[in-house]
Length: 278
Image (cartoon, rainbow, N blue to C red; front, side, top):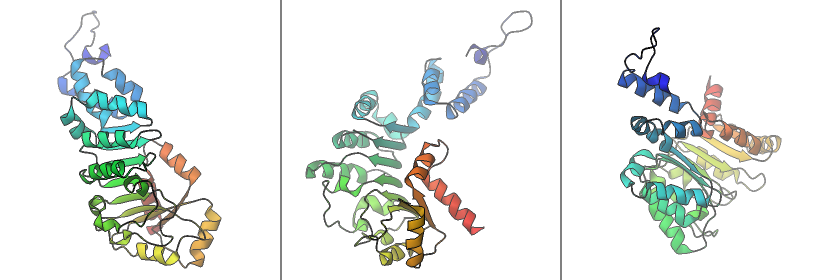
């Protein structure tokens, strides 16, 4: 990285360093478009570069197992202000324990976009603690199973609008396959909701309930996760549901979309809806 700090004249003498703001801009631009390993290497260049790039490293965090989650806590436990201010997008998956996830959410109080694909707990206290931490966050996007906040059991869930967490959510993905079998869970009454992702179970999903949710006045896109396009489209046609806001996504398509660093599932749905509107 020596070329960033000095330039060499034709006589072999070093000229003045690059202007501070230009050097800063170069590193920030490089960090924003670099793999994670490259960003980590930038942290070692100089203390000033560390300050510029560290916040980009923590802006979007993915923790795929319990060990990494614990390491993450150790790295930020003594810097709660930094964790709250800089971590805004958080993805926890795999073997991360619910208690560890709860601890991380209390630490990262500024998270607005959360993916929480972890095993539920059958202990009411653990679910209650997680629910309490979620309610304190400024969340607007969340993808998770309801069982995480309901003790891991399929029980009679309260209406979602009665839970503080859901009153401010704009983008909601529920992982359970049984949603819309017997109840909408009050999804159509969530005041801020604009995007929704649910599982379509051909033969089990209630068409009337799906119609009710599509009646939400602010709904912009609804992703229906499916097994087979032909069967799903046939079911929609038979139910009289022809809505440009409905986007069908099978497992392979979802994996391809999520593998792309520049596109989220929500952005993909918005693109499809926009194309249909033209």
